[in-house]
Length: 246
Image 1 (cartoon, rainbow, N blue to C red):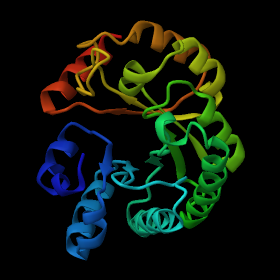
Image 2: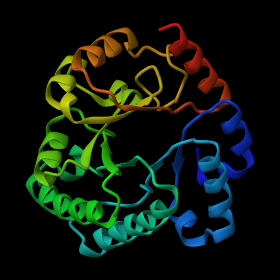
Image 3: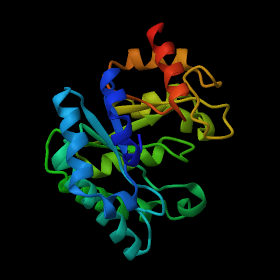
Image 4: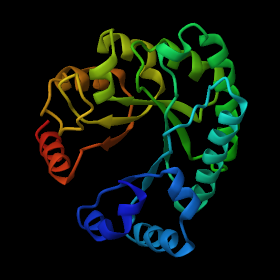
């Protein structure tokens, strides 16, 4: 849920006992007030609800070749870490900023700069209970994510599996993703599409193979955090209904 929508939906969240992933933009981090922060945090805490964070990602490039761009990226993450002191998120989802078109011929340079960035970011989140989870976005294969996670080499830097993004971009099977990244999964973003647009449909409303996905997840033996990423309330409700009969 976008941070700007959190306050107006807070009672609905509590009514349905929904732990919430809060999405922050750069503008949110520049313009929030203490009042807009502390009131929903207190309400969630009093109702025993946990939160996770989704970090800003638009225009940011943690492995970019331009030093100033990386500095802005790190600044945004450090701003987010300050909010984490209040909300105490269990997971902070981040985008890797990789795609083959920009970095395919410079993957080693991207990896080197990304590793430096994420090591600093992990250190900026003070709580040992907070895990940074890098999400698959445009990745066609799991290779760059594996290299990044193993290069950062921290138990607090893990993987967020996004089913919708996999369905759009992956050129290899679900089995291969689980084989290579299954041991690093800390969170899963659940949404569906037809493999062309990032529609954020409810689970089962597109053509992603959820039965196979959940079979592989069960065999993997992990217990990740699940986040439903529906485009709207209706798609979220469809996902909840699907999960109840799973």
